[in-house]
Image (cartoon, rainbow, N blue to C red; front, side):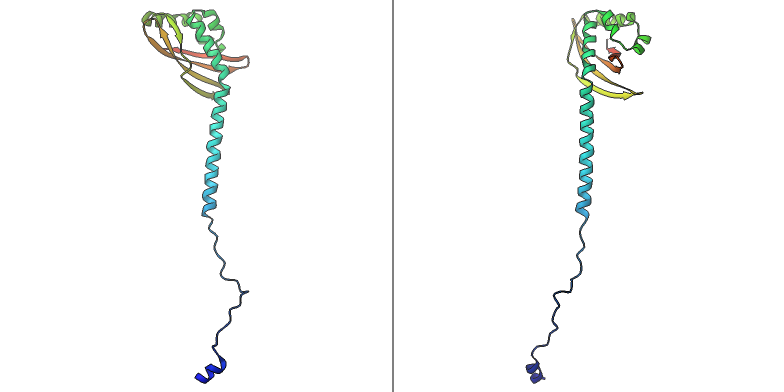
Length: 166
C-alpha cells in the first residue's frame, strides 16, 4: 500500500473554483429600520413646518388683536367694536364690552396697558382659520389676564371673542 501511495502520490479531489458557494442571505433589517426612521423624520419635520407656517400666518391677527386691546385700554369702544367679527357683534353689544371693562376696572383699577402676547393657539374650525392670543394686563391696583380670539374673514382679521378676567 505504501508503494502504491508513493507511486500515485497523495490523492485529493481538486476543488473547482468556478462552482459558486452557497449564496449569502442579505440582511434587510437595516434598510427597514432606515426607512422607518426616514418616514418619522419627514413626518415630524412636516408637522413642525406646518405649525410654524400657521403661527406666521396668524401675525396679521395679532396686529388686529393688539389694536383692539389698545382701543379697549383707551376706552375707545367705537373703534374696538368696529374691529369685531359680525358673528361676535350679534352676541356682544358695544354696551356689553363697556360693562366688561367697567367690571374689571371696578375691582382692579383703571387698565393701564397690556403685555405682548404670551401664548398663541392657532386653529381651523368650520372652514375658518383663527388664533387665540393670551395677554397680561396692568391696572392701577393689580394685574389681570385675558385673551383675544381672532378669525380670518374675507375683509381681513376680525375679533371673534374677548375675555378679561376680573
